[in-house]
Image (cartoon, rainbow, N blue to C red; front, side, top):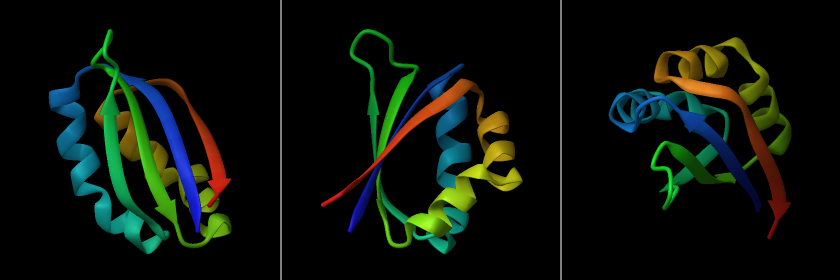
Length: 88
């Protein structure tokens, strides 16, 4: 199993969370599942997410696609996310 760690800044958690939650069906279709969301202790708008990835190629394509970029824009993501994939 592959694990994805994804970090980015957001404008406002209360605005970001509903967009993130609504985008779950698209993530599941892309084999990106079991999200765990962490907020920075010093900056609650610094988000780190951990996902399980079923197919890394499909997941990478999903995150590089217009749908994911549009969702991040609507959610108020600031800058470019930083991501790391690891194998269990």
